[in-house]
Image (tube, rainbow, N blue to C red; front, side, top):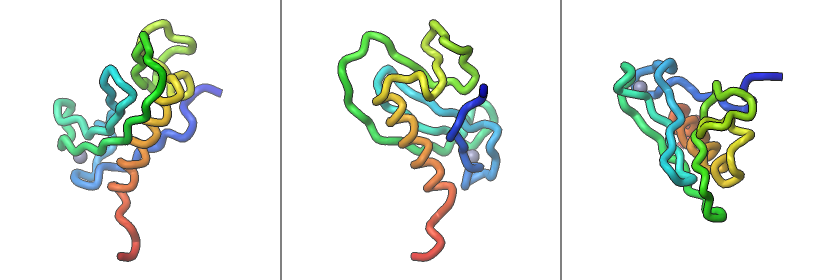
Length: 105
Ligand SMILES: [Zn+2]
């Protein structure tokens, strides 16, 4: 195995680049995708939904390169708390919806 399943971010609809896309989150189950302007991207963002869950003492941050069973905050998508995973997936979906406008009005 290895690698992340199901996380495919489309290229930024504003600058057309994909190398600066980041999945960000705060200390809650709230995520967004950003074309990181501090890395050279254009700063576009797409925010996902917030999913409430039990109060967590541990915040997890999505990291596609987190080592297996990482003890730090960084986790792969499948290792996140369920509501974090849903929130991250909704941010990914929001970004990809924005990146590909509907084909017909
Ligand atoms: Zn961009």
